[in-house]
Image (cartoon, rainbow, N blue to C red; front, side, top):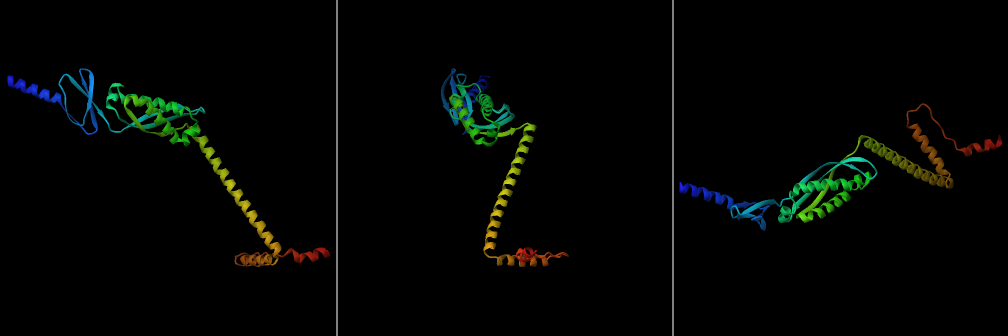
Length: 245
């Protein structure tokens, strides 16, 4: 009976005293409630009952920020969600400075997302996401630094607009396309008028060029299967008859 009890105690001692940490894990060691050091990775030996260990992962965490109802500076109600990438840099601070750093970071990201997006207009929120992402990252990194956490990237994933705002933006985009088409058409007409002016100047200096143009026009008309043919007559041929009349 004594040997069985001794074996049980030895197994309990080894199970409580020997811990193995993976490469990405660190163990914050508490001895009688006080932090003594951070150990790992590899084999860790603890004093049973006296020592307690809290595991902390150093891997990059991708945290999804739920959709937040945001009212932009120009009073447009939208829903915005994002994703935050961070990692623990100081396991000791992440353990003793905050009760649950994952929950705390998630709550801080939600409130920061609403605050930052509410300070900009809708057009800026849609067109300048990189600027918004950088601002979010800087604010989150500043507030989580005392917790031993480094926020590396914040990305706004989706901006959900109301239906009436989507229709208004579609009309605006259509009007912009029509405006560009009219501008391009007017520019083409302007260039064509310039070319015609140059052609008229050349013809006025060389009247025989107009006769060549007449002949070319007659050739084009004769090549078409048309029952009606128009013969252009130079106005110079009619001038004597007009004066005589």
